[in-house]
Length: 575
Image: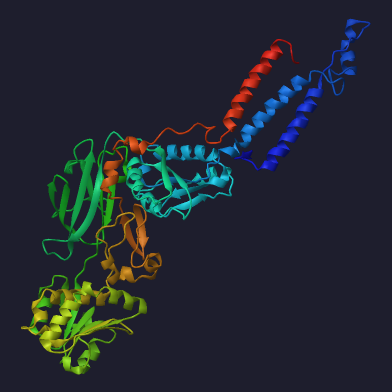
């Protein structure tokens, strides 16, 4: 026999103590002794001299003693969690509690946790392990740990607003040569999606599925983009809505605020069947909050927030005489503001610039410098401050408008090799051939030229980044690796390769920058109100004794013996 609550030696010691206690109590019983009194007033003296209970005497009615002993031993075995070792099916049992947004409905996670504790208590420890499906699945209970530890470890657990990681975990859950049964506690749509990806040798059982809601509506997207009007200091914000069991909420059903206050004048709202578009929202670093006026039973998608960017024009100073094409780009780019070189954040230095003026204006200031192609320098040279920046820039040159096909076309046009060099220095610099900006050149006439100038200057300024949208469980945009956020050591430590996966929905700080992460998952918004299919529900759970749980049987038998003992006592068969 095995036990869920206590080790075998504790059960054995407890049984021995109970045996001694029952025997002692059985021997300590009422003894009737006739006493002749000289007078009725002497009865108190007789009681003191002859106590009504005493030890010893002839052993009488051993079956009554055996019945009492069996009763207390059955209660002790039930408390110890008696199990049948013959019920071992030879499989590895993994219990997976999904702590994702799917179980954020009213009471769903608490019900799943209670079902998990009940099922794990009925499984021998050597056969099972328990996982919590958090951001990264974590081991709650190993096979060599007592079941009693599970409740304490689950006490502070809770479902969080993020997508489920169960399908991804299940795809890699199989062990070579092992037969595994996964007991899933979560949502039917997740289980249905995961079953198709399970490896060979792994079976999945629906041990608990959250009941579907009667209906749901919520916010499924919230993101910003540069304003279509061309205003650099403003952005357009898209709010996407969805619903199941009813129509999507309209504009009147939403409460939209900027930093906790009503939207300022000048913001135009465009509605359609799937949501609304807010145009020309001030990009001053505020927080836009969107919420349903009437909440429903699934609160995870009823409200969302977005930290807006701080979009200020970049101050650019010019040293020397620039090619007309480059002057036009600087004049027409709404994100740039030409100022005196001494007031500039970045410089654009022509190839014919006076050396003294260049030195006076550009001491320690990042600059885009033009050089003659005949000087022997590569067509594009980038100087970074650290080796980590060097690798990040080399991996994302395409974001600056530089690619191999375009370099080949430039080389054919100019009749010389076009190379790209990334080196390390004291501060950021970009150097390019001045001939690339000739009015009749292919590079100057291509869309890549203004893109190269704009992004190079902003990269040189190392301005604070902004995140157009942030979805829980999804990576940040990879283009951000060219900005200050991607260059932060705090972000690189959290990165998986060049991906930074976001945590659960809520307000977070990433590399010192506030970041509002939202759930924004249409499948969850619709799926929490979708009824489970018969295949997802699975079969009925086996009885407790079929799972090897004998504690319930011991408790029932003890109750039956208690009734028998009471009946025999009423009839006078036992004392």
